[in-house]
Image 1 (spheres, rainbow, N blue to C red):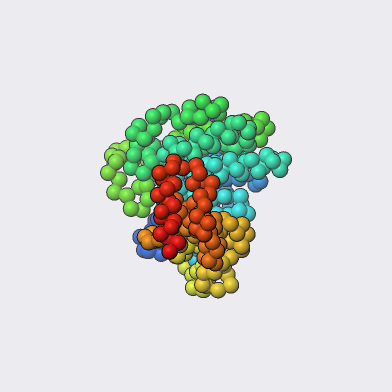
Image 2 (cartoon, rainbow, N blue to C red):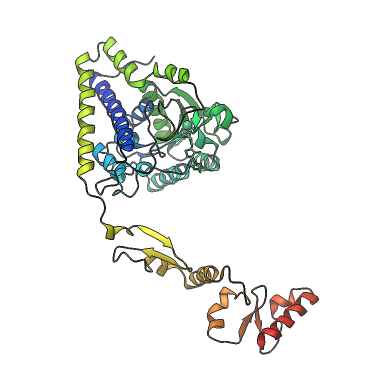
Amino acid sequence: MADLPDASTCYELLARMALIRRFEEEAGRQYQRAKAGGFLHLAIGEEATIVGTTSVMREEDFLIGTYRTHGHAIARGTEPKRVMAELFGRVDGTSGGRGGSMHIFDAEKRFMGGYGIVGGNLPIAAGLALASQYKGEDAVTVCMFGDGASNTGNFGETMNLAALWTLPVLFLVENNLYGMGTSIERHSAQTDLSKKAEGYGIPGRRIDGMDVIAVREGVAEGLRLAREEERPTLLEAFTYRYRGHSAADPEVYREREEVDEWRQKDPIETFAKRCVEAGVLGEREVKQAREAADEAVEAAVEFADDSPEPALDTMYENLYAVTDPGGWYAVDERSPEPHRGEQEEQMPAAARELAEAGAAYAGREEGPRPNPAIQGDAQEGSAHRVGDHGEPVNAEEGERDEADAAKPDDEAEADEVAEAEDAT
Ligand SMILES: Cc1ncc(C[n+]2csc(CCOP(=O)(O)OP(=O)(O)O)c2C)c(N)n1
Ligand SMILES: [Mg+2]
């Protein structure tokens, strides 16, 4: 077992883990009270994996996670009150109350989210690492994701590019043995996840995700390899969530005994005990860490409660919407109504016409379907017409154009009959 660091580091690790635990418990309670809406995924039991990782990251490093990331943001330094306000959907939340539990984001702390799409953060991590490499910066991106996410196509694509481009990235799979209600034996052909990127040239290593010191060591080495040797690695941290997958999980897929067994390895209890037994921390300090967590979370709830909900007339801020019938509209801050915005103005006119024509004519049963490429002309009554296949034809002269010339004769003839009928 690795040695304990100095007393103040141990206290900080313990206090951070205790804070996340308390925060998550309270988030669960507030969800039951319907103060927090949407979905809620708690990371109770996974604190050592989270805190062990962030404790050896530098300020300039990036962290990106999944939808179970309240703790990750807090570990990175985001104030708990801002995370709680986000859960409550209030303006002082990390995403102005628009993201909710699954979309915590704090660019200032280089916590880059918060993603609801399983495995969706993997290619973004590669992008962040590529940006650092391109700019010649020292930052490493740490990408944390679940065992279930290791089955996605994104996993393979990202590993390939990370290895090919020697990106400064560290992948850390939080193996809590389940993807929703499916155990790892049932969802992954390779259950040793540390081996899953070997074929791409990314070495892996397994670590005890319930031991904050073991996580620190594994991550520190992974960061060093990424930063100094441009070598991405994959760490598999064994951890466990004591609560269900989300707030609404009947947990029929696992036995109570299994949960109890993992509770014996509680990352906070075991670390506190170890610190006390080693004489690095006293019982008084352990108590102090817990009380500080209680206070911070109580203040966070109060702050979130006092924070206003976003004003109704800001409802369409930061949104893009596809409206009916056809057309892409950006919604901006000038008024709550949807109207054409900057994005669309920048689109090449031809692409816009194609998109709008496609949407506006979809489902129209009668008449020939106009070729969007010449739609403008057809509407203005020009001689251009379109055939059954959307190909341009010249009805006045009855000429076959190039598209027709490529067709077998009988098909082209049938088209010509149709054109003649249309022309009347
Ligand atoms: C692309 C995609 N597929 C399916 C889902 C539904 N889904 C949400 S969480 C989850 C399980 C993911 O498990 P894992 O990666 O192990 O993360 P954990 O929840 O254990 O932290 C699934 C399948 C989703 N959100 N995104
Ligand atoms: Mg999992």
